[in-house]
Length: 365
Image (cartoon, rainbow, N blue to C red; front, top):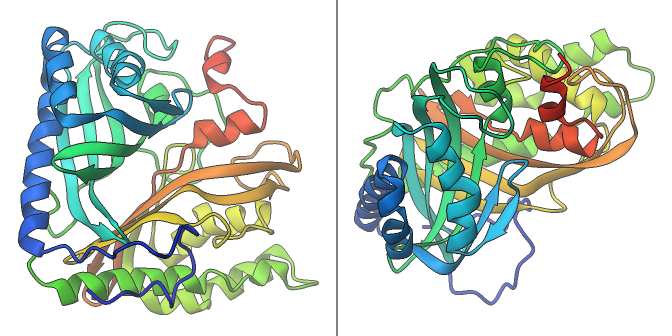
């Protein structure tokens, strides 16, 4: 596959002497099937069998970059004791439901990535949240770097705000967008995408990166414009030519889902741009960029570092604090345009950096 990194600078500034991996689509399909099956087994196995599974499928020194408050952990023991054991104790009948499974290579690394729901009955507290003894769907987005049929590094964002919402609490300001479960891709093939067309994969990724590059045009920084004038410029922004007329933007809980460019601008983009005027997408960079047929994905750990300047986004008092953002973007390209965009963001982590602990707020309500 052609290297397009020279056109898009939003990549991690690693050693450039690596050997670029050009992953065969047939191997990519094998990887997806293998690790889909593996992760299903890990989610659904008993605590008694967990050690063996983790030892077989994780490198001993595997790293896991997780959502707040788990954060960065290393080694199979920590992955077991900080992530999986608490989950299984809280949700003993846990199972995994995949919405999207894609894979690919970026630079010298091979990945498999997922949007899924870890589903179970919430019978014991998790992260300090009291149990409901009802069904919970944990919205889970992942990218796993793999080598020799083992996971060597993982990035996992579970939407903890959505978890808290389902548990009957709402410790933050009301979302502007619509709350609810994220759907699978409208094309119906998200879990079983068996793409063999490398050119299509490249085309999909190139479209999404081109749209992302257009976001560097920032009308919110033009002097003298009021909010309505900035909105008008965003509605006629260069991004417009990349979004499908029936686009869906699925944001994390706390922001919510938006439909169409006007919904996207009103429910997320305009408030976000007003709050983070000095953001830079290029300083930290992507750890992953993969295209897989009509789907693609990018992600950063962290994607953006910027100052929280106003209360437009999330509605909290402007604190002028620098925050880092853990973000992934999953895309479906349909009819030549971006039709759907699933965007996990670790909102709890951002609020923590602002001095707001959502798990403590639950017990004050």
